[in-house]
Length: 357
Image (tube, rainbow, N blue to C red; front, side, top):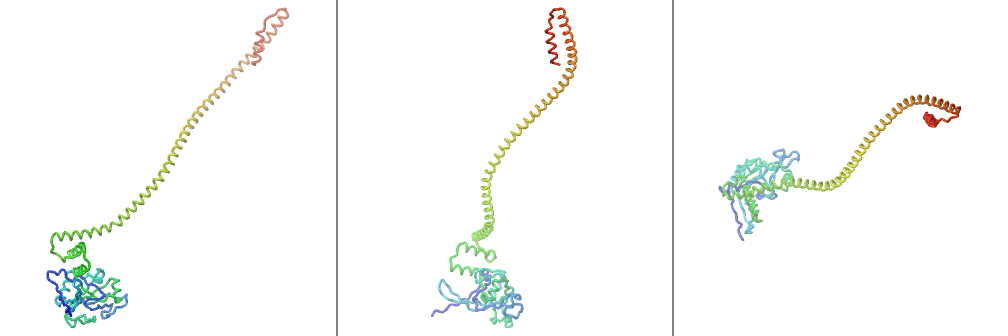
């Protein structure tokens, strides 16, 4: 029967940046210890009513010399790992030193918000406050108290779905995932880049920093592109609508242009007719004025001629009377003498004068 290997895990001085940087809320904690959660009353180890909950939980993060089962998929072999008291203390100190008290994950996968470590301590005696929470674990155990403001996680805790904590090193966790699936160059650079941003890797070649910078630039530009897509889509759609309106408007514009041209032609025709009518009116008025002047002039002439005619008739009447008397006397005298005197012209003038009067 093959003996199961037991391995002590330590934190080397040159690899402190790879120490614990997050605590994960899990369904099956590797240290086999469930956390307790409590509400408003400090001595109440069960959760209170929802509106009174403080949303706090207390749990061991690491137990010294506690054997934790592991399986190596590369060799298909089982083994156990453990941490000494010194390593547990050092891990707790590095966890706070690197300001990781606000970092947490769910099932060693997704980073989650709303989880904050508010207390961290090492059990150093039998009077340790961990006993108030129902724990009886060896000295050197690392305990944490966490505030849970994430509604979804708190419901999972209350329902008993999440039972405890499990520590993780960001880099270790990434390498475990890499053993299962071969990572891409981008994934590797992204992992290194996050460690550099957090100050956990400070010594690397200039070329390597350049590669990490490029990966970071790609990530930033990707986010910028993602943010620009809605604006681009909005403006492109607006342009399409405007172009469609232009096509529709152009067709309508052609029809309206023909109507305008026809109306303009009609207006010009009517204008010319109006101008001609104005000219005719002017001519008619001028001719009417001239005719009226002529009529008035002739009326005055008639008045003048009538006055003159009256005078002429008066003279002619006298001449006629005298001529008639004299001609009658002449004809009688010629008859008495038995002579014939020519009086034809005088008689003709007398008759004409009589006709005019």
